[in-house]
Length: 71
Image 1 (tube, rainbow, N blue to C red):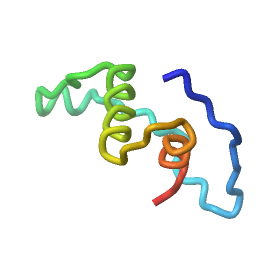
Image 2 (image 1 turned 90 degrees about the horizontal axis):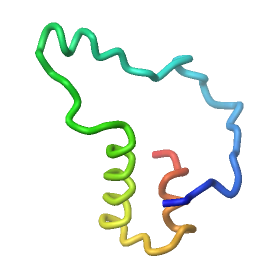
Image 3 (image 1 turned 90 degrees about the vertical axis):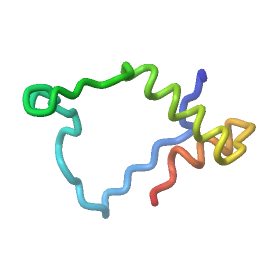
């Protein structure tokens, strides 16, 4: 989509959370036989497309706000 945030705001008053959010799917594969259906790239593309369809975000400013706001 050739998108970059116009500004990155660090929220230092928020809890840091986990240091890494990278998933290790070893247990899913070994115990459940589950493997992802989509590559990371395709998953991001599908997510962005879903945002555009679901929220009718037709321009970059609306999409940026939707991607950057915290629920």
